Length: 373
Ligand code: SF4
Image (tube, rainbow, N blue to C red; front, side):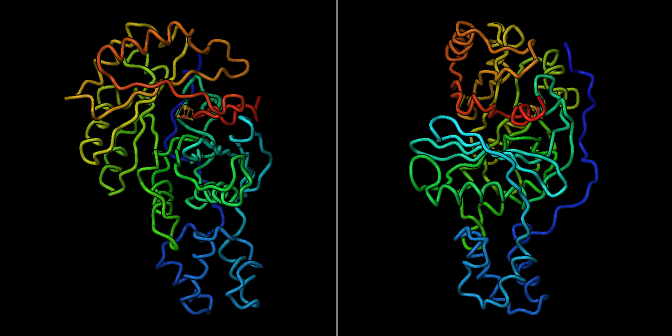
């Protein structure tokens, strides 16, 4: 199998840190920082109300603050972190992908997907990715750097602002779900990702006031981090990118499997479900003649079996073919249907993920492919 030659990279290269931003700080740190600038501490609450509740970063709109302090506070605490390079829309404007350039030139992407009953923001957590999955263009490009907490939060704030202002097809709305399934392995940037989740779930005005139940953190299976996540008191949904039920194939498709194998990852996921009472998602990209055989469906049911089926849900994802990667093709529909049938036969809760955003490569790790192609 091609592509297995890239090394796994767990630690991001050290690069210039992005500027400090309001969304990097806790409520207490914000008060201290405002006072250190010579302002009264209550200004912090005003600023938070503008940023998190009003989604206003333009100081001209901060009319409850004296005009002479607004620019200083904006420059100090809300430096622009994401510079939109371009944007693609599909699904009649209900799916919007943004390509962002960060302060050091690194590029990342986010995708806003609007459905009749919810709006989901898919965010990146690293520029590039060090997990080296051979079917994934981002993985083939390697890891550039970790994103900061604020760089992650800003992707959500941008989507929330645009939805709130009615700029997305379907009229004004709110972000109901955030999924960490853009570029990067969230668990390899654990501290910033947890920091971002805390900013999302902290009640307004100190955070965005979202429900942890609407947040999904995905991982290829960094077992110690899964165990750590279970202790954070943040009942987010955990999604495991499994993609193969046997170690022989998974060692190649998801190279981190050579560190923590299928059984270890599934055990950690099962423990997570027990501790948090949250059903775990098992993500499985169906790749023609690679991992979509009927016997692998049977084996998948076998390796996931833990007590009853209440702890898990399998999401089958039709592969997004990437340019120039002819080896990696979506499964034939008949094979996909047989795979589903076999899981259902054994009682495994399973759905085939809709292919929203398909025209614009909106899937884990496939986001940046078009930029490099
Ligand atoms: S599939 Fe996801 S984890 Fe694997 S290399 Fe791509 S971005 Fe990283």
